[in-house]
Image (cartoon, rainbow, N blue to C red; front, side, top):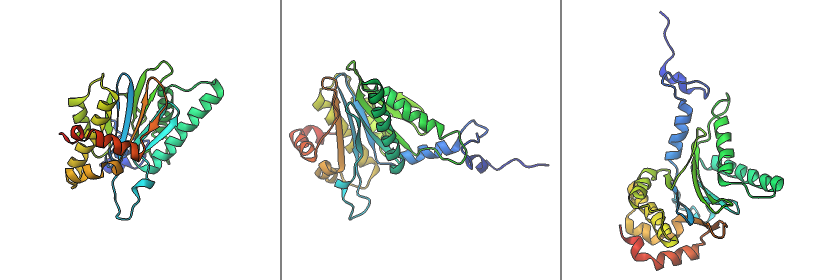
Amino acid sequence: MAMGPPATAYDRAITIFSPEGRLYQVMYASEAVKQGWTSLGLRTEEYVIIAAEKRKIMKLLDLDSMEKIYKVDDHIGVTFAGIGGDGRVLIDYARLVAARHRLIYGEPASVEYIVKSVADVKQMYTQHGGVRPFGVALIFGGVDEDGSTRLFRTEPGGQYFGYYAIAIGIGGDHANSFFEKNYRKNMSFDEAVITVIKALINSRVATSDEKREDILAELPSIIEIGYISAKDKVFKKMSHEDLSKFIEEHKKEIESS
């Protein structure tokens, strides 16, 4: 009697579905995202905040040389979790799409247009032999021409969804639970940034051996924050000095659980 292929055979090529209708390589790529450093985003009626943590994986690593938040266009920022090289390539592609749109149409592309373009590339890499899926998820935040705030996450398989708040990476589940309990759509800028910082702190405490007080002491060096307002539509990153000043001014709120 002929024997069927072993279960592991279904993960040898991206174009082979398992009997359950799954693409195992895409599932493995999603697991790579879960191993990445925590990144997250939050949008209110007036602001979009994106943030990410950095972890010192080697004693001599210079954290200041690392970047987890990038500007795609004047009105769009992005962060990621997963394989860094994959994230860099897709962010460069997003920048190219944004620049091309401005050149051809004389106006900025909508946030969703950029997100869909990146998601289309991701999807294409799930249906061709000889390639692998991108092992990275990206969070895009920005403001459209009409002043509406937008926040999206793209998945390794090419799906994308809009969110009010979302976290990815190793501490994603903990940060998302925090958002579910504390998110409000009408937050002020300061409240939104504090919520994002506290979500990063809680997720890091839950996923590392570091003590909360040690994390708080190093906070300005181990997180990055970018933001954009619906009013000026210009994406900016907080400098180390601005972030340190903000944390000092709101120390009591940030340190509260």
